[in-house]
Length: 369
Image 1 (cartoon, rainbow, N blue to C red):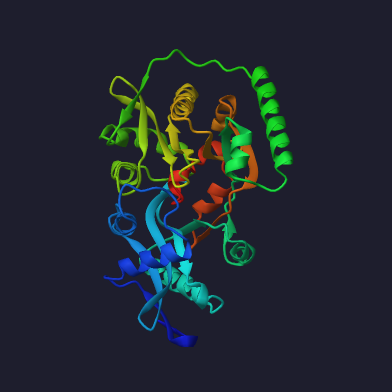
Image 2: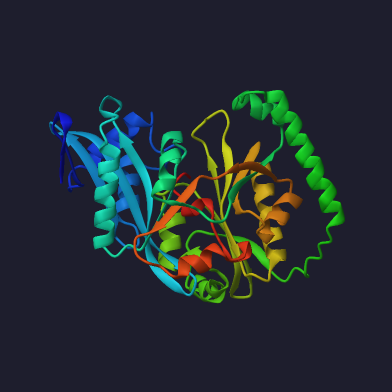
């Protein structure tokens, strides 16, 4: 417990403070979360931090005169790194009231959260931040994610996109977009791609069944970094309406799952909804399944008149070529991911030197959508 100026107390979250935290998040971020919900923000917060599969979270708060003025969250999950599975935490939903900025409240909340995480057995922590101030200071304490994670996007009408999401030097953006698109098309005409005979079909799924456990067992040893995809985790993450309105598609043959895909249309900006490929995972040797799922995603978003589709991909991952073949181009900016081991984790060195094909990281591993 810390005492700061202005009688600010930084301490662990206490039951009964849920509404105050959500009100703070809505104030600081001018609405929270930044995607449309099928429930109230409070129900979403409870889903996220109180009913997750591990029933674990680390939440530090700042309080002044009985008013919530700061919060900092971590969501716990299991990550397979190398040949072992570790308890991990993902940082998110950190906020400080504007009138209490520059009082080291964020740092004190982070210190407390790290302390509580270590006491709970957390060994790996990762998070994303777009805050330019934090991005400058974090490398002193955290490592950059060793594999470059990038946004790929597919835009149907560039002019419409620039009207709805204006950027500086729009003419350069538009010109660059067309150049990259032409380059991808040229490469794709030279790249031979021979999909296997279509021995599977793609269907919608409202709940992951027991077959997903067999799928996980079959793919997990291929990966040196992947959030554990258990049946319980996937149903919590993608099939609970409090988490969001997701569409789950699976590719299957007979009774076997060959891969799955999660899609979402973010309607937060009512006049310009955005499509996301939130997660995409197939058997390692079935790029034909990956291609079929990507084509299915493009058709789905086109049918719903979605102008832009976004997904995350690890640089040089085999799936990148498939996405490019389906009209996606790369946004050159690196996603600002950071991580650290709270204890000595030998497997992290193996992860750092791994092939991109053995790293799986998707929007579903973050809390931005």
